[in-house]
Figure 1 (cartoon, rainbow, N blue to C red):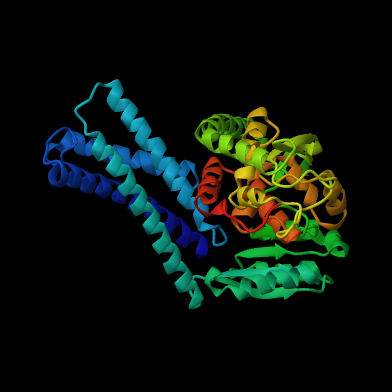
Figure 2 (cartoon, rainbow, N blue to C red):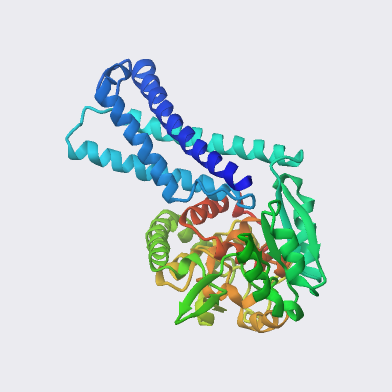
Length: 455
């Protein structure tokens, strides 16, 4: 029943998107040309004759097809809403850019660019609001006991218990545990009895290592009865959220640590953005850096720059640059500074508090040792300690270290929890996007540069 209803819901979802796109165009044309500009051109509503009407419908269908290519009509109770909202923005942009290119190709220059811009904003807003409302409505219905998905959980240990606890804790998911099979004796008969008739939508196998011998038997029973199956791997606690499966011959390889930056295009975009942005920032901050040079020289004898060995991409060492904020000392390679470190100068305390001391790292970024955004690099002395005591600590070295990062803008910098810092770094690595980098830079500029202490 759920599968049949889901197909109907997906169809209605697509049709309603098409109507919303048409409405967004009509509204944008009216608002821009009739209210704001009081003008008439090809984009005016009174120009929507039969030919233009058909064109508008074709465009709406194309938008829906692009959304379908982004799998926007494959719903999942467990999917995060933010992922779908980003796809709406990208799909709409692709459709609009394609339409604008066709207007230019056919020299239809008398088509208001203002209408196109307003149309993009309006259509995105309507499609996103609709999805948020649908999500809220469905979760409300499921929390009341309707539209439930009935699952059978197989497993006699902690993993099965954790899965049951997780889905029952959130009633809005609409997941109902019909039965938990803990005893594997007579497994075929138990599964046949449960799955032969309608009433079970999915089987979840959450087996402990000593139960893995039953996995083939479970899969075969599910396929025999035409029931979907999901598997909680026994190595659940070490597997990332987005593993990649490759095929060698007839063998499936699960590659645990793949990131968006493993894609050559993504890596190129991030590096290109780093080069362009760091050059711009070097030019814009040059007066501030000049003042910093003068301030360091006047307040303490010694070099202007503080050079320190750090561990970067692929565990390679590099020299990180900062404006010197402390008197010359012998603990530069192993010592973290504290908030009231007696080695600091007054001017040094000021440039550390305002993050001005970090500006020379723009040259590290330009050189390629660092990125504008990424996990903060660590001193080799501490890397050797943390790799033994902090799980997954070394994974952060799969990307370039950054001047700022997701952990830093969330308050984890300096003398804070290393475990929490690594959790945020890993989330950033697994969920990287150029828009995320830009968001982190904005958060750094507007609130993330003033801090009490950082390493």
